[in-house]
Image (cartoon, rainbow, N blue to C red; front, side):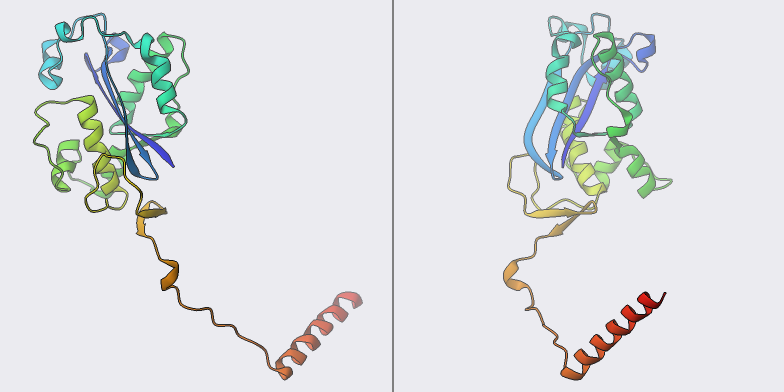
Length: 229
């Protein structure tokens, strides 16, 4: 199973009003384990970035000036995403921006059916409690010391760790690095792999002569009933 944990930063809250994506961060998971592969781009929105938005992510117009526009990285992004499940916190927001950008450059839209909204998962698990990314990181003891402001790649890395906790718990010492899986997945829960050497020997049951004769007689009786009907 391949999944992509994805986050964006934008110039504002409404793509309908012309707001644009200015940063995309993606983290790849394979069989619910991080592979170390990431996709990260800053983008020139070709418009102003309001101060209110800059206070959230710290990205100003001078920083993104000269960065590629979305159209130039669209194919690269779609290739990285492939047909993977997309894990997004508050998915309608990011998906709305991504699809608006994709539509503007005549690229295929991303289907909501391929999206897992981690915000919904958290709301179902922790009803009536705060389920922001910060709150979930604190709940699971995930280090937030580097998160002075929002950042697409940083938040995607944090969300990958949160997501693994939401679906059943992370392995000890798990990190966003390439490592060999030490577990297999069974119904969204990380389960320890059983060694073949620890399995109990098979116990073979055999029929006695009388039990075998009774079984044959029953089969003959069933066969005769079928023929008479």
